[in-house]
Image (cartoon, rainbow, N blue to C red; front, side, top):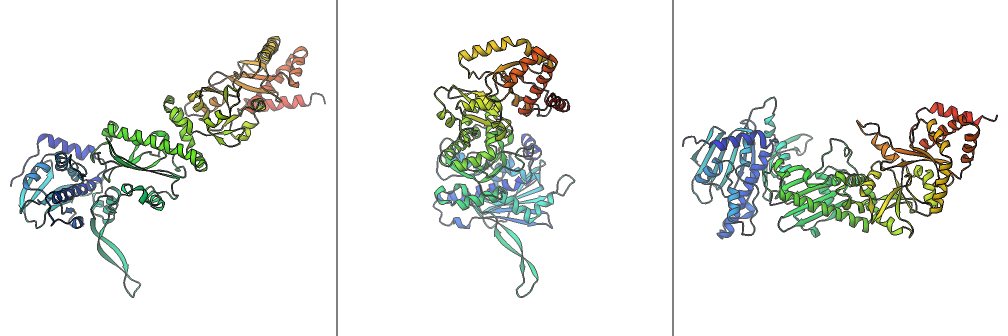
Length: 628
């Protein structure tokens, strides 16, 4: 029979397939194995409907043969096979899917489970080969036929001798080039690895000749022996009933599949049936991946179509704040040939992702309630990511995540939730108080903290850079606003105390102006305060941007220098106040020196740098030696 031409449209599609759709050439084997599995499925289904007792399910298999010398790889099955007409229809028109048509014809019948779309995937063979030969004999025919093609030039079909039904596909592997080493697909270990990676859960045995080194009996010498072995496991763990799976099996699967040296902290195994069907096996690791906060880290779950790997890292299945979750999703409704671009617009995938997000969050909430120790272990490693999630995307996810956050409590001396804080609030307490710093111990020594603790109010100690940004985005929790103890609007005084303080500040306005000028107007205002119990001075911030937020923002790459609106506050009831008033009357130059010392001291308390530490040290020494 002469050469047949592909249709013009098919030629363009074939060119697109080879050069664009699949950039990962090794998936050709996944596609051909999936097609073989489809063919066996169809034969078995027909045997059930036709009550053909000659077909025995245990005899089904897929064989792979390598011939390095002739540069060929052969994939053979004993499935339904194809007639001459089916070869022409299914392989002569790209994207004409025999399996898809079969599924559509039988979509209302049970036990139909067909992988992929025979047609598009088959042509991936031309990514690695320059000649493809398909020998096939239909279950309903006595005659076999051979389909031969070198690619876009066309194809031919001719009769051939084939004893058993099924299909045998032989690829002549391309010669190596500078860009591609096609010879790797003739290596037994490479093929085993590809099968294990993509087709490990095909339900029929995939067999090939495997080499082993074996010690010769009675000697110390080794010999190479070749044996036919099944190289796929066939049964996906996640398709087993959860009650039948041991913890050890879950853990072993995780450490082997995701290359972790520790067993996971949490396993989430879920199966969903309905409008969309899928199985998911998710793991929360025990520790942070070493590259988690680097550009090299890729979030995402493995995506399978009925046990066949489509994608190793499907980022669309996880929100960024759950990017630490590892695992897989397997859906029989997804096409094997789905591309990255299609995934981004796939409604089914978006629904699965939403369900998984809710499932992960629910499991974390349950862990928080039922196993606090384990949750705190989890939060130690991944709490920062939850805080980033609360803050990112303009706070769109704050309501989902706020009850998962933990902060150190000044009264409980341990990590607490926002809900626990609110439940312990005093009747007269209006706000949720927090303080920021590098460590718990340093925060505990802040002058602003002392008065709040003295009033019996609980304070949340924030030590991560993102903490205050997260609370600012949450804004309030159960109608309680968040207040930084270093902010200027705490309003802890009574009305009478406010009036007294206001008058004191008015009476000493000129003194404060001199002090402000002495520190080069680095602060918005100098004033007395009642917020300090025993401490002489502190810096407070005015407005939404606090001192600690500014410190964080200014450490970011390419950031412009940002300044908080700060106020130098002096304890009206401290001895230093009497000294300042006396200097204002008697020695204004000396007052300026005191102003500089107080301001720089307040900066050091806040963990800020001072512009001229030498000058500061000299001023302190000068004051210390004044009366010698």
